[in-house]
Length: 443
Image (cartoon, rainbow, N blue to C red; front, top):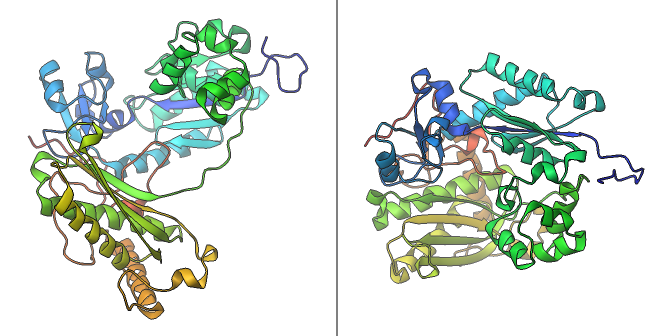
C-alpha cells in the first residue's frame, strides 16, 4: 500500500494536475489558420525540402507520420501532407494567452515547457476529478478553437500526473489513484514513462527490471544505483506517490544551434549563421546581467558518429560585449577552416563560464581578447552593446548590427523553443509574425 509521507497509513491523495497540449506547434498552426484544420500537416524548422518535422498534426500521426520524419519520407507516406515553417514567436504569444485562461480556473504552479503546465490542487479541487479537467478544456475551446486540444492527468504527484496526461492522447484524461498502483499502469512499457530514457531502460533491464511491476518493487537505494545519481531516488519517490523536491538549477551556458540547409553549407554562409547564433546568445546573457569567460564552437556532419563531430573552445577574461565574443568566434572559425574534416550539417555556438559582476575580482577584469586593451576599451564596447540592445528592442532585432547583416539560407535564425525554456520576445531576431501569417514550405 502506498502511504502518505506522514506515515499515517492513508493513501496518498490527488494533489497534482498536469496539462499537456497535443502536438502543440501543429495544432497552434491549425488554430491560427482554419484551412489547415482536419488536414495532415508537418511543422519544419526552416524553409528547406531537406529538413525534418519538429511536429506533426494528429491527422498525420493517425496515418503513420511521426515526429522527426524527413519531408521526403513524409511525402512518400502522405503525398497530400502540407508543411509549414515554425513561428516560435507566435507560439510564445499563444502560450501566454493560454496561461491566462488556465489561471481563471486554477493557479499555475509551474510551467514545464511551452505546452506543459502543473497545477497544485486543494482537496476540494481534487474531488472534482474529470469535471475540473473538462472545465479547463471547455474554457480553452471557447477562448481559442477546437483545434487546440490538451490532455490532462490528475494524480498524487507530478510524475504520476504527467504519466496520466500522456496515457490517452489526444484530448484525453486520466486520474491515477493510489489504490490502482501499480496495476493501473501495468499496460505501459517502461519507455512510456517520463524520466526513463533509452539508457536508463538498458540499465533497468541489466538489473532484471523489464516491466512496471519490476520497477515498482525496486527499493529507493536500488533506483539511485541504477540511475547513477539522486534522480533515481527522486523518480522512485514520485512514482510511489511521495513528492520529491528538486533544487533550482543554475544556468551554466547560453547558446544556440541550427541545422544547416543543403544550400546553406558554403563556408561564408556557415560563418554568417554562426555569427547570428552568437549575437542572439550574447543578448540573452546581457539581459540576465551575466558575463562569460569561455566560448565554444561546434559542427556536426551528416552521420551521428563521433568522427563527424568537431569542437573548439576559447577562454578570455569575463566579458559581456559583442566585440569580445565576435573576435573569439573568428578565431574558432579560422581553426575550422583549417581543420574541419567534413562538410558541416549543423552548427552550434555556446557561451560558458558564467559569472556575475559580484563574483568577479579586479584581476579577472584585467586585459581583453586583444593585447593592449584596457578597462576603458572594455567599458566602451559594453556600452556599445547595451545601446544596440536598446535600439533593437525599440526598432526591431534587425535595426542594426555590429558588421554586415547576411541573409541566411533557410530563413529564420533566432531563438527557438526548447524543452524547459521559453524565449522572451527580445530573443527573436526577425520581425514578429502575425498569428494568421502561415508560412508554407516554398518547395
